[in-house]
Image (tube, rainbow, N blue to C red; front, side):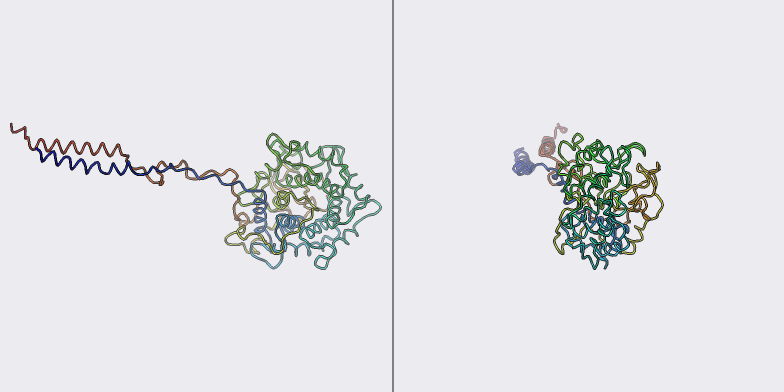
Length: 469
């Protein structure tokens, strides 16, 4: 019997020995979730947008074959601190954005809006518009001026505004007749439209109003600001953004990134705080809506559509708080980060083919067909029709419209981190190592006690052999 007791004691020691190590082991802190990702800055967003545009650039250096979009690309690139001379697409074509503007400006020499827009891009890139690759864009603007009326070109809002902006960007004065001509185009409700004469109250639009205010403020004449800004305030929607027109004539109005961008630039040009109480709708501002419109690939989308170069082209400068005619001096030779390009860059030919556009109107949305925008256009020859389109055309008379969807490779640029990213993988595991849970000390002790009781009881029965009594 003594042997049984001794053996049982030894066995109990062996079974309970691991428990001492379990109890003595240090307690690891519970696993914690990874901290949320840092929200991207507006500079980060602008760079991602420029990367999307770089991937959308055609072999001829343009965006969609448009002087207006390409000029905005150059201006936004300079505003973000990069050198526009490096804009040669993800596939590194020989022709850059500035080369395209030089060539295309020859075909637009009689268009004051397009000539002025090209000159703005040259100044933003640190160049001289009077000596731009053998061209004098300033002389072309002067030749388009009508001294009797003060009008540039066809005297439309965009022609007048972009001519004035280009001259101011180049450091030149603007004659009082030109300023008076632009102010005379203001509608009774404080708005401007894209035509050559004022229109009835309610027929103006946010884009034309913003560009006119920007030009007048650049010319140091803020006298139209009060009525113009009041009109813009009346157009702001509850999400903080701006539609082309806050009108249900063509369906429910919706804020869009293109309108957000030009209104934001106009507010900055007028010395307004776009996030101040005057421009808030609850907690929403034009900036909160603009940021929410950015897709993961960096591009910006018109409501209900995929991101396009047309909608994205003006956003970078707006995010950087740079209105037209503001002096910008980019760092020479500093190109966009290579991470913004797809892993396999699109060929120049494929990009040009994929982004080629037709003259037909896309499928319906909330805007009128001849949607004028900040991309300069020829004088409109038709009035808006009640048939909306999916993506506004760059010009009422333009022969090409932006593609209804971007190039298949255009959205493959690096993603913009979500502002409120959550840790992946669900709830953290109870096991500090992240693996499956193991039995605790109490479970181990219970099993050991049962085993010990079985051995002692079996040994006593074997030695006592009560069945033999």
